[in-house]
Length: 135
Image (cartoon, rainbow, N blue to C red; front, top):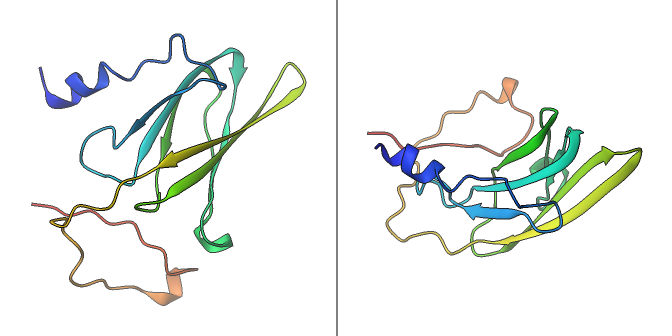
C-alpha cells in the first residue's frame, strides 16, 4: 500500500457535520500550512471557503463543487497561529455559515526555504507566492 493510500484511509466524511467537522492538519505530512476539512450535508451544496489572511491580498476564497460529501482543501495557513476559515453554503433556502479555527505549529527548523524567486511583476497582482521544494 502506498503512503498516499494509507493516509487517505483517514479522509472520511461519514459521521461528520459542519458543526463537528473532521479537521486534518498537514494531511499528506509534506506541507505543514495546509489542512483538510471533512464533513457531510443532507443535500448537495457548494461550500464557499474563505481563508482569512492579514489583508485583502492574502485572503483566499474558493467555491467547491456541489456534493453531499465535502473534502475541503485548505492552503495558505500562517505558521504558529490560530487561522480563521469561514465556510458558507445555502441549504434548504437557508444560509449556513461556520467559522473554523485551525492552530498551526511553528515551522520545522529544517524546512527548505526558497533561495531564489523570479517574479514577472507584469503577471502578478500581489506579493503572495506558493512554492514547493523538489528533489
